Image (tube, rainbow, N blue to C red):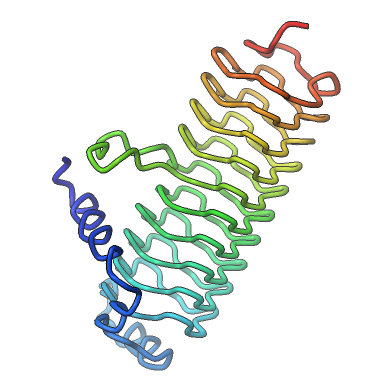
Length: 265
C-alpha cells in the first residue's frame, strides 16, 4: 500500500466508517461563528487548520476557506453556497447532502471525498484532484475542466478507488480537457454536457444520457456504453476503440466525422 499521507487518511477513515455515525460526536464540534472567527484570526500567510472538525448542518454560505486544511472534516448537510474553497484540502472529508451551489473549489484536493447527494450547481471545480463518491449529486452547469479525476491506481490493495457519479445530474456541465478515466457515469444525465478532449478511458456510461453532448476529441477507449443515448451528440474525432456497445441509441443522429471504433452498421 502507498505510504502517501492521503492513503493513510483513507485507511483510517474507512476503518472509522465501520462504526456508527455516532462517532461524529467525537469530532470537535464548531459553531458557524466560531469557525468564521478562527478563519478571520488565522495568522497572515497561514492556512487555517480545520482538520477533523464537525461542521455538519452549519450555514457557511460565502465563507472564504481559501487554502484551508479540511481533511477528515464532516460537513454533511452544510450550506456552502458561493463559499470559496480554492486550494483547500478536502481529503477524506464528508459533504453528503451539502449545498455547494455556486461554490469555488478550484485546484482543491478532493481525494476520497464523500459528496453523495450533494448540490454543486454552477460550482467551479476546475483543476481539482478528485476521487470520490458523487452518487445522485447535482452538477448542473458545473465547471469540471482541467481536472484529474482518474482512478487511483496505487491503492488497489483497498479496492480500486475511482470517481463515481452514478445517477447524478450534470446537464450542461463542462468536463472538457479533464481526465475521468475509469469513472462511473452510469445512469447520469449528461444532456448537453461538454466533454471535449476529455480522457474517459474505461469509463462506464451504462444507461447514461449523452444527448446533445460535445465529445469532440474525447478518449473513450475500452469504455462501457450499454443503453447509452447519443442522440444529436458531437462525436467528431472521438476514440471508441475497444469500447463495448450494446443497446446504444441515437448514433444515427450524432455527428461522427473522424470518430474511431464506432460499431459498423
